[in-house]
Structures are given as structure tokens and as C-alpha cells.
Image (cartoon, rainbow over all chains, first blue to last red; front, side):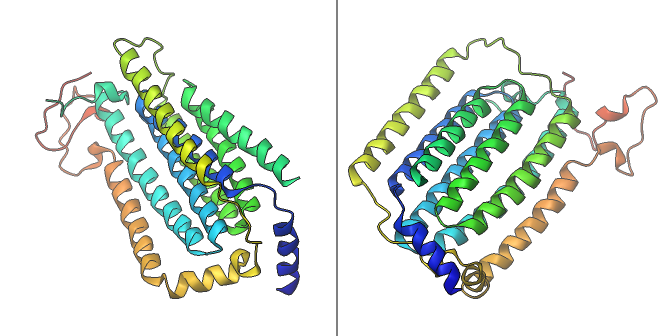
Length: 115
Length: 190
């Protein structure tokens, strides 16, 4: 444990990257994911964009955990991972069911509930 | 050294994220998302969260994206039609909105300049501390997440089940088996 602390302490003292850079990268990834989720029409691509957005939020959570020296951010990332797995499983099953009925997963053609 | 590693993997993450969003073939988009996730995992290690990085590679890149690839190959999705009709306004407004959002957030961060002046300490990166906190203070959310995963697996297998596997499916002889719906649901054929 002390050896681990010593090595990490040396890593910490040579740190040259401000946490705000990580937050900026996270915002950039989130914006890219937002643009993808809004512009794509393939359902799988929209899902991939949503996964990208979730991952950018994870990055900002870990960055804040590093900034404040608190472990809670990493634990929240753990829960976000689990919820993302559940969401992917249910969403992909829904796409399989929709594809069986309509032979497409183009979201522009899923307009049965449109007014 | 750390700055160089950060710059390399940040650039890699952004470039592969753009490929995820822009590529028309979903298989290439998924493989590019794997690259993004690996780059972000490297950044997690830089931030002193090696366990989260391992989880990212194991769960995201190892499980979730393999599920995506299976579904893509199961559905035999061809590439999206390149023909966009009436979608230009939607696309450009979405890109503009994302750019404005990104700019606002960047300006916000530019003004605050949060620096990692705290050195990385042992308790922050130790797996033992993380596990003990997860199983004492966050035990109830942990159990709820386990229940959520169980419900999601059951729901996914129920939703994705073939409808003609239902016992009351009296198949008319002329019907195509994969297009039968249970009950009296009427639907238009594509």
C-alpha cells in the first residue's frame, strides 16, 4: 500500500494536465454525440451516439473525482456503466422486434405514433 | 510526458468519435467507438482511476459493443441510404446546436481553469477503498442495480422473442413465418 501511494504520489507531482482540459474534452465528445443522435436516421447509429454521450459524462465524473480527491465520482461511473448495459440490452431487443415487423430500423419510417 | 499522452489520446478519442457519428456503415462506426472507449480508458488511467478504466474496457468494449456487433450482423443492416430528402435543415440545425453548446461549455471551462493541484493519493486509486465504499455506503444502490440488470435481461429476451414461438400462433399456411404477430394486431406490410 505504501509503495502504491509512493508511486502515485510521484505521478501526481509530475502532473501537467489541468482537469479543465479533461472537462473540455468531455464536453466536445458530448457535443459530437449529441449531433450524431440528432442527425442520424439509422437506429443503431443513434444508439452508438448515445453510448458516446454516456461515456463523455463518465469522463467528466472521473475528472471531478480527481479534482476534489473524492471517490464518489468513480462509484457513480460504476452505476452509469451498469445502467448503460441495461439500456443497450433493452434497446437492441426493441430494434430486433421492430426490424421483424417493419424490415427497417430507419427512425424516419417509425412514424406509427406520429400525429 | 503526461501532457503528450493526454494530447495523443484526446485527439484519438475526438477523431474516432467523429468517425462514429459520421460513418454510414454501422460496423465501422462500432469499431471506431471501440477506439474511442480505449482512448478514454487511457485518460481514466491518467486521472488515477485504473479500476474504472478496466471496467470500461471489459464492460463497454468487451460486452456492450460485442452485443451491438451481433445485432448489426443479425439484422443484416445495409448502409444507410445516402439519399437525404428534406433532412438538410434538421442536420444543419443539429450541428449548429451542438457547436453552440460546445462553445458555451468551453468558454465556461476556459474561465474557471480548474487545476489538479491535489496530488493523487493512495486512497483515491486503491481498489480496496473503492470496494469497501461501494459495499458499505452504496450497498442499496448496488443491489438495485443488480435488480435492474436482471429486469433488463428478462425484458430483452421477452421483447426479442420470435412472435411465432407463442403457443397460440395458429399459422395460416400461406403466411410467412417471420411476419406473424400475436393477437389481433393489424399492421401494414412495408
